[in-house]
Length: 244
Ligand SMILES: Nc1ncnc2c1ncn2[C@@H]1O[C@H](COP(=O)(O)OP(=O)(O)OP(=O)(O)O)[C@@H](O)[C@H]1O
Image 1 (cartoon, rainbow, N blue to C red):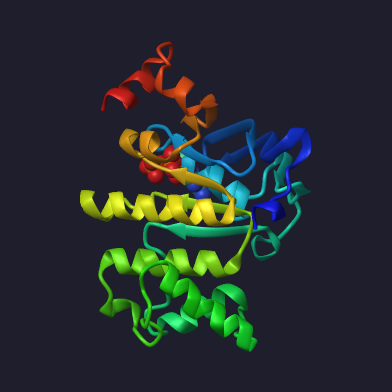
Image 2 (image 1 turned 45 degrees about the vertical axis):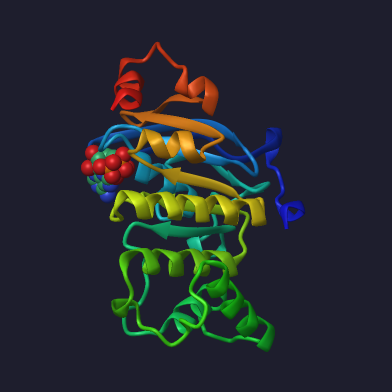
């Protein structure tokens, strides 16, 4: 499926081109072009704009100026449902009264119009994330790690070229974080999609990322391949983050 991943203008998987946004008293000013098919860590202090950056890509925020490009498409005017993205957030957005089969099926079709091939894909995705046979389970009956696996299965069946993850492992204990990071890496290897991962954990950047961003006060303070990011010595906030 990696052949399906289109690159955008300037060969970028993702670009924010002169994007300006004001929310309350906070100004955001994002200009960046990121490589396609890579895992990109989004780091920065609390309140710096990491979630806002993802919201601009997902379409939950619309820029006052500038363009949003995803997988070769100018998506600035598109509704979130029309954008080529899947989302996994910390609280994993599963409907607690619906079983996993239905939750994941809604990732394919919001009206739950599923072909028999779609049904097979749901069971295969559950198996792929280590939840074979969990079709009838309700989210409250799962552990935190299992719920996160289910959220990954839903992203997998959506089969979109861009995956946005906002601190997906923050609620998990350290050993579980490592196995979920390994699962994310394996799914990325399978799909070749472009992954943006918001994280407060430098170990996660080292373990997973090909490229990293540092967001500060509504701007991209640093965007670099991961080796250069980890070796960065000029910006004190980045040094603090890497040392933490
Ligand atoms: N709808 C809004 N109206 C007003 N201010 C907002 C709105 N959304 C976000 N902000 C402000 O913009 C800033 C950036 O928020 P954002 O959630 O993007 O930060 P973050 O880097 O993801 O933070 P954290 O690491 O704590 O999750 C914060 O000061 C926040 O209060």
